[in-house]
Amino acid sequence: MAYDVKKTIPEVKNYIGGKFVPHHGDFLDVLSPVDGEKISKVPLSSAEQLDQAVISARAALAAWSATTIKDRVQIFFKYKSLMERDMDDLAYLVHVENGKTIDEAVAEVKKGIEVAEFACSLPQLVGGEVLEVSRGVECRIDKHPVGVVACIVPFNFPFMVPNWTIPNALALGNVMVMKPSEVVPLSCIKIAELLKEAGLPDGVFNIVNGDRVIVEGMCDHPGIDAVTFVGSTKVAKIVYQRATHNLKRALCLGGAKNHLIVLPDANPDMTANNIIASMAGCAGQRCMAASAMVGVGKIDTIMEKIVEEAKKVVPGENLGAVISAQAKARIEGYITEAEKGGARVLLDGRNFKVKGKENGYYVGPTVIDNVTPDMKIAQEEVFGPVLAIMRTNTVDEAIAIENKNPYGNAAAVFTQSGGMARYVADRASAGMIGVNIGVPVPREPFSFGGWNDSKFGAGDITGKSSIEFFTKPKKTTVKWNAEAKQNWMS
Ligand code: NAD
Image 1: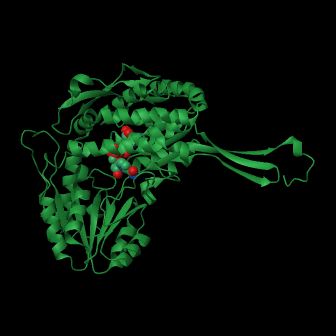
Image 2: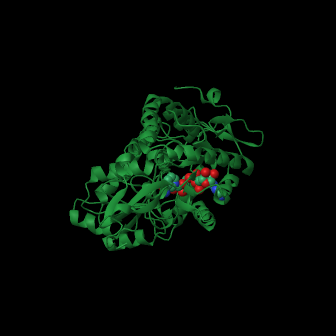
Image 3: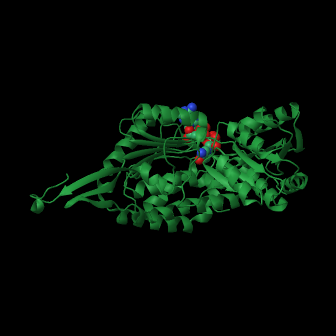
């Protein structure tokens, strides 16, 4: 065990102006999904506490944005090496508060580190453009920070998702107020400590814990210039509408229902392996998880392998817990309803108990065949280790099912034909496409973001695309006096 979380963080505090501030109002218990035990408590902050954080951030903005980007990224070089130094503690914290396995938590921390690594390369990417537009007249573009950025994050990646925005936004000269998920608020404490140790000036990064009071406050606060949100589609819509109504820049990533289309020529071992890893990884609580599979034509061998692979996934060993007792009940409800509607449960993960962790929230791997597109399990985000399989005779029918779904985060095709892979990739209505890959997360410098109801706002949240969101372009046109008598075009 890396360290005792209950002793290290018995009470979560807000982080304002470089200091952890005790809270004197209401708290919410933080429970570990691993065993259902209380590990900490988190403040339900007020609008006044948000206001203090915004004041602190705004006060830090002028000095921070006046430094050069080359200086700013030095802090992220250090931050990266501190995350590497503390990898075990960070991964353990993610495991305890979120319930995912230690291996998955390590992968999550590594992905956070990768974004910091990308931020360190920003000076190479944001150099302004200059062009002599007319003899002696020069236009140039410089990228300026947007200002105070508010970030609202979900429960499923307590370390990685905050780090989707922190390194890039801050390296580009912005300051930030972060609202962690109230269900998993502990990793952000470590993030604040490491940023401070790396040399980030006080006030540049702030944390306000809480629930919708803080989210709504962020959308309304006149001192906040931009809002990023990652979470469910229902809340993404609310936040996008409210923040843009208040004339803020907003980028809101929502939920998902990712379709994996399996063609009969797919490699059975590789396909089964990838699909089960995608469906069961992080207990299915990923916006990139395989949730619906559409099998085209005769795929009997692949189906056998899928069930075989799924049986290798064991809760409490290589399968983590789901986030809460309510989530477990919701996921199992989807399975029961599909079964009642005529679907065949090939592998049933309901009512699973892990020995020694009887109060943990575990759902076993579940594979359901003969699901029809009209079923709830085929349409809604289940967010658990459940694979709903639909069957079609043609690839066009499979594409039609994928296209009809309102989400559009990811889609994947499994085939050995390059032509068919391109055919499906071109027609799938999703922002991230996998060919023989079940979790097609674009690695840096490629950016992360879906389409349709999986994302509201222009551009993506990470990678090169995030530069546009976190900066505003200033266009300067210059004409020098010495050449004033010439016949200028401008
Ligand atoms: P959620 O929408 O319930 O919560 C996200 C954030 O919004 C939290 O900080 C929460 O405090 C706040 N919130 C919740 N309800 C609110 C309300 N009514 N008004 C204002 N704020 C509110 O999401 P979650 O359950 O924490 O996370 C799971 C969801 O996030 C899934 O739908 C998943 O697909 C999605 N997700 C999407 C991506 C992506 O990149 N598209 C990445 C990770 C997670």
